[in-house]
Length: 495
Image 1 (tube, rainbow, N blue to C red):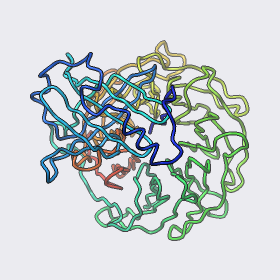
Image 2: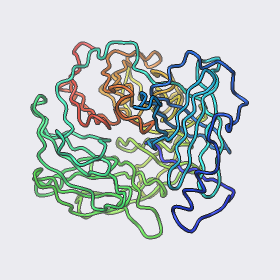
Image 3: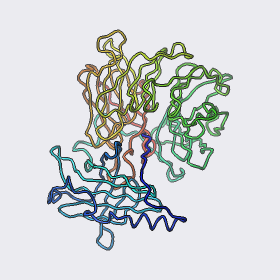
Image 4: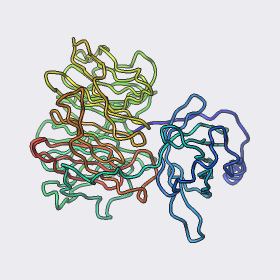
């Protein structure tokens, strides 16, 4: 998922206590559509727009582009609409033929958006404002209402089972999954590690739980599994506060923390994702770049090297590693192919970038028709799958062969491959399976819609199907869904 920081310039005042600050922000204006910029508005253009629903969009202001979500719910008992912006409850929602206006004033921030026109692509347009005690950011807003696609709920993927803990799990969202020997290991924001027996998908049973160590906002965003000496098994958890947490899961009913690595003085300990290849772990540290460790003994890792992108921008978000090659998703710097055969001196071999709004988010590499193909996913409004040739020595090295997407208002997230099939966690569009037998002509062959509609969630652009793992032999896809928890899907044969 994206990491976002928007700086707001220009002090407009300050308060000595929360109540004064709240009153200040609430009185900053933006109380009606007429207080918002009107340059993109077309009177009457929203006459046919039903207000209730989920809205995804992107805002551009002060040189910054970011995604946002708004939700408008059915009328309350007073006959008024309710809603939220990015999960923050709105106190005012107003719909006319000219405008759809949503305003949310909180203790330390004010948010307001107004849709007031429709562009040639059928997208809603308008404006967005966010204020803090440091000032206000005004931005142009473009987006769409998100509705279930006009298709069958599933095709060539069958639900075999699902669980969200039957009400016993602590609050949190499931963001990633890895499965080994009949056990699914789930990384859950704010809740920690959950271990579920998946041998009988119709009866998924939790066998173990380890909460996060810190109650001050720690999250586990990724999980990988490794085996160590003396028959031990470990789950490596990517933590935003503790770098990598090494969890002994040899006894899955009693997971215990066995160590940490990846933290160093004078730098962030935010490891967003990690990859394991053989006895090496590759860490995506959002401030430091790529860290490489020998984990022959997972409880006593040895650092081998590091790599920073020469572009000097963006941050390392995700990665795929196979042998001597690391494929790095470096956000605004693009997709980097790096030689890690000498881990003390990694070398950049090539980059895929410059394809418009660059947010290199995740990747997976597979072999198709004698080519080495990278599945590259963005993460934003307008995101898509890029099929990138990473066959070294080819004329098309580090170039896109094709792209594929469902629709601009829903983003792709994590990607995996099962031979010639790309398995995509596609947020609100569920799980998508794309045939890459001809990498220049990707073709959708299966899907399963995990999203239950705008009445559930609506707090974030990044919801629903988040992570996947696959069992090629059994043709099973395991799905980490932010709302529904863990889903087990069966993939039809013959595709």
